[in-house]
Length: 395
Image (cartoon, rainbow, N blue to C red):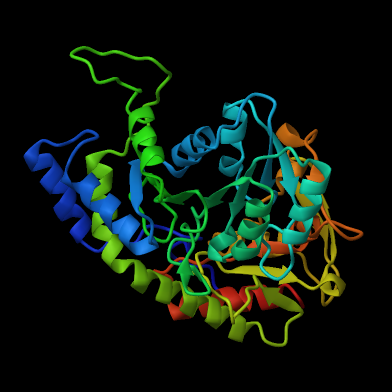
């Protein structure tokens, strides 16, 4: 008999190691508590050195970095921007901040990321588009070299949203280094965290300097506060940077532990009509941020979803994400639905959506997929119980 967890098993929480407090205390004791200080300088160097870009600018959030990347790309009111469809809304909202119009690109099934074939189709329909925002979903690299080649061929700026994929590589090269402008996140649930914070990465010195200026309210070099263009309060705090600085040495350890979780699920689900979030082993090394599950089509029971609710009809030997998520919650474990595709969101329902073939991949992945508890503090015994909970849904 499966017993509920005494302590909640989470999807993904911060894992602290001690050095974080040392650097936060240093900020406090030296009184560098705002958006200037040694922690920021060190974290920017750590990030640029690790990812392999010339410049990094610490910002208050990954969303802030995406917003300034969209500004750098020159997106104007009414301009269309090609965006990954299966992602969190923070990827897309910055386009709207600048008055742009998202056009969503379906995923391919080998990685669940932006489909290069669909992107090429999008350029045939909208050859005037000059900006592409591509996401590496759940820490798995997309086909970024193909995406970049397509962007280069059409003279489009590539913004690489690597918020979820810090430490993941494509053909040995770090995600977050392929685009003209790239973004990573240190949000509380990411592979390493500052509780908040993000980074814009680029090889363009002028762009990095613009971001530093824009993120500190666009102050001009004058003996008073002088402003000639709009600015933002987007700079990273030296205190937050202290947390990130203490986390960075443990990035490799976190990735290894996340990978072990993925592999234990993969082994534990053998024989079930399910598959894990996929990647191309010869080309990609994910950071395995979240382990996800996809129920086979012929093993799906009837599932119904409205805009805000979900239900299912139990069938022997079958299950669905709604049942699995409800059962996990009943046992005090946290799972999540796959990101609801942007073209299915009420706010973006009138935006164009480009896919190839008879049916969109993203709608199917959303219908059959879910995110499993992937917290690196989860014990092997707790994960074994999660596996048994999932297995019980097929009875």
